[in-house]
Each structure stands twice: as structure tokens, then as C-alpha cells.
Length: 276
Ligand SMILES: Nc1ncnc2c1ncn2[C@@H]1O[C@H](COP(=O)(O)OP(=O)(O)O)[C@@H](O)[C@H]1O
Ligand SMILES: [Mg+2]
Image (cartoon, rainbow, N blue to C red; front, side, top):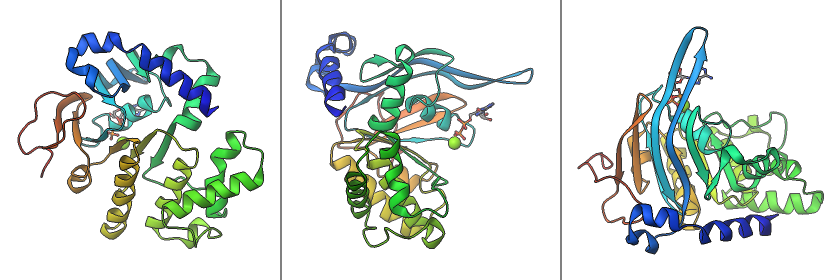
């Protein structure tokens, strides 16, 4: 399966000229775009009222970038995250993941992407109660069709060790602190070795010490080459990212690179925005 995905990725890398010509020859030196959101809108019908959650989003993320998405409550952050994570489709516009239009993917391809390519972390952890940390982390492997119990256990143990919970395998969620529960959720997101990690306000329910521990883990994920997209409304959390995108009323109002970081494409930086 992984080889099928990397074959797909190689094929996509070969078909990058369209993007290269669009961005000029400098784009050739950059890594391939992993996420391309083009003119995306999302409108929810709420009774007679149309809620315009996204109003024309354009966004390109290169492989290996560490991006924070910030904005007030209701600005469309989660809606955008759901589209990027293939949990929902745009009302109009296109979304290409590794160069492939998500709207054209079969159900099988979509579940493969959600299962293996993307790891999700949510504010509310979403762990299964009365179930051990180990079993919670094994779950994506069960869905992913890994039959061998031994392999599932070994991989779940490794993922838990990676987030510093190698000694909490048998603890159930209610026997763990909030920070530890979120680390179990991260281990669960990582156990399938996804290349993209999406996190929706992952530190929203954590105290400051647990937040720092969690951000250190995200730093390591970024250093290991993963693409990390983190939604937050906390300035100190956003400051860890290398690029900060600000949403307002369903539109991107700024897209700033952190000083000294040259990866990716974006509009000119607005002074002070990403460094509160
Ligand atoms: N399933 C839904 N049905 C109707 N409206 C929704 C739905 N999900 C989100 N919205 C609305 O879309 C807008 C953006 O929501 P959301 O993406 O959750 O924002 P954020 O994550 O930035 O707080 C809000 O006005 C919200 O009320
Ligand atoms: Mg939200």
C-alpha cells in the first residue's frame, strides 16, 4: 500500500510543470506542492439561510512546510481543515492533494488517503473511553487492514514511545492527564506514518506545560519531514510555525513567512503579524 502511494507521489512529481510554469522558474527549485486549494468556497444550507463558511480560498502548501492557520471563532478554520483532510468537499473550486483532484477520487482512494496519508488531531482528543492507550492507537491499523496483532501492537507501542508514553500503554483515557490524552491522540494520528499531520486546535484544552510538550512533538514531526498544518487561536502556538495564515469571514487576509524561512510560496509578509 505504501509503495502504491509513493508510486502515485512519484507520478505526481513528474507532472509538476503546470505548477512550475504558473509560479515561474524559481518554483523548480522548490519541493512539490502537496496541497493546492484553488478558489474554494463552502456554503452550508442552514434552513433557509446560506452560511458562506469559505469565500474563495487559494492556498498552496509545499511538502514539509509547517503552517499555522489562525482566525477568530467562526472564520472558517475547521471547514478549511475538513476540506484539506478530505473529510468534506468544497461547494465550488478545486482541491488537489499531491496533484490529484480530490473530487475525482474513488471512495477507496479517499479512505486510503484519510487512513494512511493524513493524520488528524482534534481539540477534544476523541479517544475511546474505557479502552487502553495501546488499543486506541492500534485502531487506525485495524481499519487499515493490518491483521497481525503483533505488528499492530509493536507499531502502537513505537508510536506511544515516540510521544513519551511508553510507560502508559495500559492506561485508559480517564487515567491520563489532558496532555497525555492528547499525546495518545497524536500517537494514534502517527501510527500509520502519514506524510501530513492536521491538527485542529490541539492545545485548546491543555495547560501551558502540556502545550509546550505538545508543540515540541509537532516540531519533531516537522523536522522529520512531515507537512504539519495546525489550527490555533493562540499566538504562542502559531509562533512555532514557519508560516502563518490568517482567516477572516471565510477568506485569507494574510499569509506570512516567518523571518529567515524561505520555503513555500506566499504573499509578502506583513510586519509583526506572525511574531506577536
Ligand atoms: N455543518 C454546518 N452547518 C452549518 N453551518 C456551519 C457548519 N459548520 C460550520 N458552520 C458555520 O460556518 C462558519 C465557519 O465555521 P468553522 O469552520 O467551524 O469556523 P472556525 O473553525 O474558524 O471556528 C461558522 O459561521 C459556522 O457557524
Ligand atoms: Mg473550529
